[in-house]
Length: 202
Figure 1 (cartoon, rainbow, N blue to C red):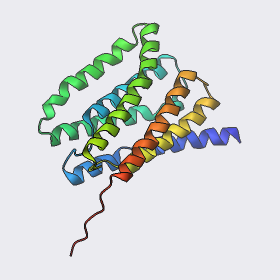
Figure 2 (cartoon, rainbow, N blue to C red):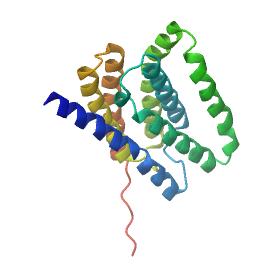
Figure 3 (cartoon, rainbow, N blue to C red):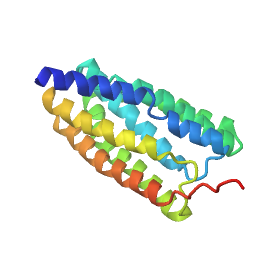
Figure 4 (cartoon, one colour):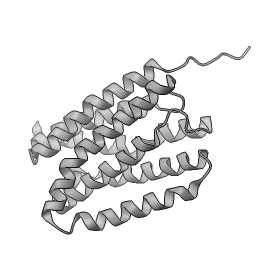
């Protein structure tokens, strides 16, 4: 029973994450705008994902417990490029992307750097959600923000709480997922609250 639950959580998480950001990318392309989407939130989320992936690789944790992170990072990079495109300057993305690549190598230099970065990544991840909430509260319009993407993010956090408890029981990772679950649910509810009804064509 436990093996079946672990299998389901791992593979359903991977399946969801393979398409997690696609509703957000579609919503942004359909609106041809980055309205309602917070650039600081996206950058912080990308940083948090990068640190989490590096931590898992560094300590040799089971591949299935973090295999979705390369997929999420690739989708976030596409979103980042879309935001810069709709804000009028794609070239501004280059320094950020270079910084993320450099960070990957710097994080693995010493164990204390890796551990510190992982502890900070929980705060970085939480800050990314709070930045998105602040953007929504300020605009009072969820614009091109996808509630489905945020809802699916909440689901993946819930499944990762289960897989972490069943495999590594790493307290740092567990704490991160519990906090991210609560904040993802909050953002989803806020997006739905500020969703403006579509105007029917006459």
